Length: 639
Ligand code: SF4
Picture 1 (cartoon, rainbow, N blue to C red):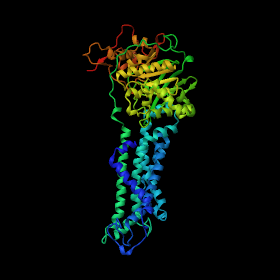
Picture 2 (picture 1 turned 135 degrees about the vertical axis):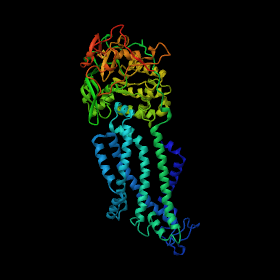
Picture 3 (picture 1 turned 180 degrees about the horizontal axis):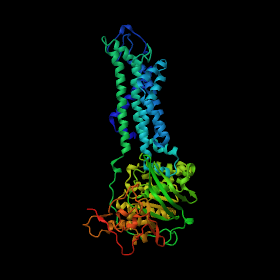
């Protein structure tokens, strides 16, 4: 960030001038040969000269000396305003934005009340009550200026709260305090610095204004407000007493504004990132059932028995509440994953697959909650975990690899620092040992030159490298289950294959289970042992990958497979798409949720909810007219 600021020459120059003024005022007793109250009536109202660089006032006092001494109290008062405003606003803004809930509502109410007060009248009342104590009045002004800063910081913290790298930090087991200190605060630092500069400028204006009205330094002591006031009284005789205070005020105000602009630009650049972070959405690869060795989870046609399973989800329902209306996005879902098994959840966007993965990792977005069923991980009831137990679950049981590797990494931290913090958080390693572990992790995800990668920021990495770093972070805590939510969607086809190969390789090395969420059959087919097909928030088919891919029993599964690019035999034809579109939660019918798009629909499909039934050993389908060998399902061409 400092480098970005220094790149703005105007802001850098303004900062240098501001620093010079502040230092000169602080060192006034050393820099000046006379005192601010030393009079010389014989030199009254003189213009600038070698002896008096800014001239003299009506009592022959050196104006430069008075500006420097007067600046000490004026700048101190402005600083008090800024410190109080920022010191109060930043914690409140972060709590309101990051914690949310009732804390946000209480803070919003208080800030609304304070902002509705007439600031000038409040200040005059405060000045009357504390006329002898200008610092107290400045502190009161800081409180009045705090609410807009609270809102600004809240907005920044709210935006950061929804970033993927915050979710990743939670799953990595970082406590709330550590996440706020290490990830949220650095991201809101830019807006905070901007607001601090503006609050200081406002405080300066108020301090000078109040002093001009007689509430500041009392004669013969100077401050800039009293100097401007005295200068205005002798303006007809000499402009220099007025100009001396005015120039000092104008110069500091201007430099504060320019520094604020520089900080704002720096913050915007830091928030938006470099253009290299935006990547083209890649084409989908053809589906091919990989012949790579599968993990051993028992006989190939059997799903794990619940007592052998690592993860057992039963009757899971997830709902989101918006505007007082609860909408289910997942209903009555069963899922079982054995230790070391790779299970894929596949379906179009809006089918609820990511809600399942987020429920398992306890990362449901704001407004989302588990409203039914159970999630058992080993011997833990995941849905009821809280506090230290939830921290331990995220720290040692599950890890999360997000879709967009660029937004899943904190852009303000070098890769080495980011990983070191994860490694140190739970293992108590020394810095040297943690750095060695970081290099080991980067080598484990097959990044060339780990030492060089550790020194880079996320925006200096390619998409594939960033996803490898994301995977390194995920395995840093030695999870038993790695959840990968569309881990290759943001990557090009070649890198997709490399990342999937890496996931398979790590799964075999570490013996962890993997839950892979994807809309792309090609991705699921490359590494999964079993597949779960979701539609309309429920499972419509599940079974061994080879079985489901070669003999789909549900028309939706068959349609998904028919829409693979590899199924298009004539390159001149457009890629087929499934008839219609996914219904939103809340629009689901009583009967089959796929009925509106199904070419095999009959009247009985709409009569009642469709139960799941077995079509073969460990091959289940939610359809009353399951497809048999030779059945086809129609899709429409996207023309
Ligand atoms: S239950 Fe009926 S409408 Fe639903 S997928 Fe099966 S055939 Fe189609």
